[in-house]
Length: 309
Ligand SMILES: Cc1cc2nc3c(=O)[nH]c(=O)nc-3n(C[C@H](O)[C@H](O)[C@H](O)COP(=O)(O)O)c2cc1C
Image (cartoon, rainbow, N blue to C red; front, side):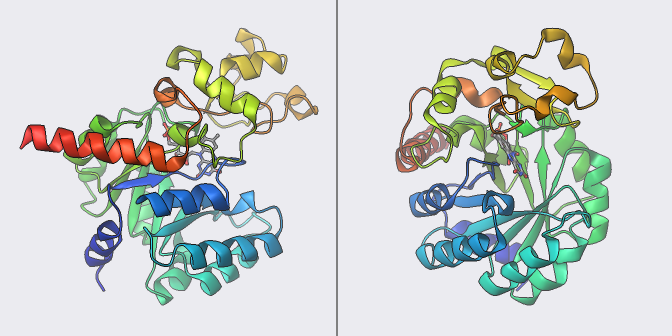
């Protein structure tokens, strides 16, 4: 099947073209399955399953529970230095996620395996240069991570980034960065995106693996509490300032373009107690089941589309 027909087939299994984006220490079996059941693509980073054996079980469970729902997806680090790469790829071959989203490396090493069972490979990119490299490596689609995204973020406006990418790529695109409501999903589609990628919106979902304090902070903060800095992991990422402050960071530390040493102490572990989130935090007002979030998103989306037609 051609890539565009495969994309159409994936979309036909969703109620709204949205992917629940993979989030480290947040997206587990329950979040993925709830997303797929609610009618959007559910995705998780393979690294959330702490061992390869656990990952095998996660994938078996998700594949079984999501057989008749919206499609599921896995996110995988494809950097050759990543120790679990070969083992994770063997699990991909066994459980066949319909969509594999690659991060921190070229999509090339996973293409044969995923194409072998009819799946698609999308590459997560933050710049037009990386987008072009991913296309040249053979990716079926691109995830454009734009300014405002939670976790490791891009810095480009979705308008400019999409325009730059459309100069050399007319294939599938997923757009991300601050998308949390129906109007933004429609806007992403108006820009030519096939799917919107929503991470932050689901951090405080009932099914999220995040603990209560983290969910509370996600609800309490506004977009003005989100800071972009490389000082935590060495790569620019968006964080909730109160979690950095609690870990001992000072405002000046945010300027560091390199990872700072004291983040390795127990009370200052990136992702575990220094919490990533994007500018979409302002849309998060309560801990809710994924189904409630998606139902409201779909209802708003249909109402907006009806108003515009
Ligand atoms: C707490 C957190 C953890 C994340 N972990 C990962 C990850 O492990 N792998 C990945 O590719 N992206 C990760 N992301 C990025 C998301 O997949 C996605 O790009 C981002 O959340 C989209 O922007 P939004 O938060 O504005 O919706 C993470 C984001 C957050 C907020």
